[in-house]
Length: 223
Image 1: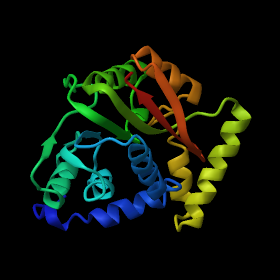
Image 2: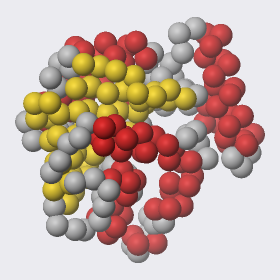
Image 3: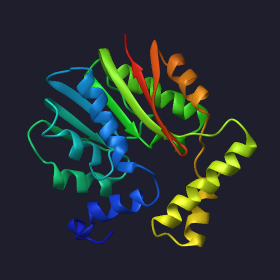
């Protein structure tokens, strides 16, 4: 990024993700739908891996939010989010999910496409930190890439994902390069493993919210 950080176009960044992650916009709508159904008011909300602020874009002005904490390891991403959402009640922190040290502070914690880059131990630590950050009755919502249950399913799902990217305008080589990152640059686990890790971390209620292509949405409730 050059010195003119405002030149970094958040819409362009999100548009590129939309060509990569199927139903990217729908993921955030699902989060809002869940929080609305939970009927929570005067929310404190921690968004881990906030990027350019996509979650805040969907939530602010729609939800009753008193405090919103943007968290990302990228200073550049966080600077973009700060430029977009420097409002009362907004906070910006540069930390990884494994470094979080909040306790009983948030009604909602979200982590969208974040923890699949981590090892099993790092993932567990990140989800435990998310659990600790929640107040009693708080909700953790995460969307992650997942691994299918069989090698045949994996091959089929990866081909389907590549086809999606090409339909959205990526060429064959770039779409193939992306699916070839599977298991090398990021480390998805099965849906059942996701749920087991969340239970180990303390969530007594763990539910599947949404599944599409190779992405899954999961809810953990701190009851």
